[in-house]
Image (tube, rainbow, N blue to C red):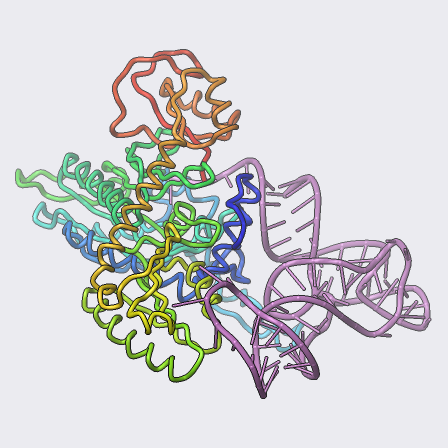
Length: 492
RNA sequence: CGGGGUGUAGCACAGUCCGGUAGUGUACCUGGUUUGGGACCAGGGGGUCCCAGGUUCGAAUCCUGGCGCCCCGACCA
């Protein structure tokens, strides 16, 4: 990229778009607000999927798939949910096109093929899934029902941004049903913890676990929990949510079961999801002015090997050595890319793989052949060192581990630096304007105060941290009593 | 939907005020020299100048009307 990470919001947006494009991750589609995820970008998403999917299975969940279309009447059943999404729904009204008599060779919607009932393209699947759960659940023996779906959803947002907010996006949505409220709450928190663990261990991105305020709650949920991350421009990003639905959907869709005691009761629900937005989080959490930096645990390519050669003979000699090194690295469970293209120069390749965020690069040239060495460069610090050729392969696991740790620590420090504690409204405004980041402040717990602060400062309550200390204070806005601090930030 | 910007080669842009039939960089192709941090030289291919209509001998350029995209806002579990 060759530029400093910009601080102005507008410049940061352009910088972000350029990075996404140059690192070969994704591009805007000609289709309104949609995104084309390119093979390299998709391979990172696949790594995320694999890691998450394993965590879901380890906690007892199974995958299933439900329809893309939700009949409008089903969609309406849970009123708050329907209302919350109504403004951003794509709707199918017809099922056929026909030749346009006015314009030869063109097609038009066949007015005779109007659907009796419109189909909503799912913005989320609660409705279609709970209408199915009604059929699947009769007895406490059918519970808990622990299901996850990998799918695409459509939300017709006013304004879109690559990965962070697109009209169509890929995600996973878990939907569970339980016999008791306690069990459902436990599930909600368990999945929140799964998300936090994924963000921290795999994405090397520290997150704050918390509960959403009433104003930010998922429509139809009793309680919404989230993980919040801090991006390098000082804005917060909601990286995942887990909802305790109470009996709202069970009642809306009449999902009842007979308990051990023989009583008919409504089940208790949860839903939780993360999306390709995590890709945006990954990019904005770690990139530098040379491009993307990938945590080794999500990198599709762990090590890239670049040969430096003048003659065909040299290339062959290097290739033989590379063969030995890369097979030793692969044996340890890592992926190696040998970039032996003779169409690009080494310097070009160095820059290209750095842009794509490959954690480790090994360069081998004639000088190394002579000395029995290689040059090893790490992406996170751009540090280079010369190593013995026959020792490099076994040093890789520790190096990758170190990179994973280092970028986590770096992001953690950054977030801490960007977290402020304030006690007055003036301080809150000042910090938001000058420093950004999370601001910890007392809040009286009312929607009115939250809305007023949002309107005046553009900052929202990101969450009420789960580990917030109980301390009595005065709301920075209203001066009323507050039992604990909450986190404010401007957010994506 | 408001404010601002923009639409010309795959990409990034100049040319538009002042009308004369399209250019630069990069990428691409060919040949040669190169190769330890984004190579160099020479040659070459590539365009409905967003769309529609109008003015004019002649429109990328002027006029009218559409549309798209970008950034900021509004919106955003």
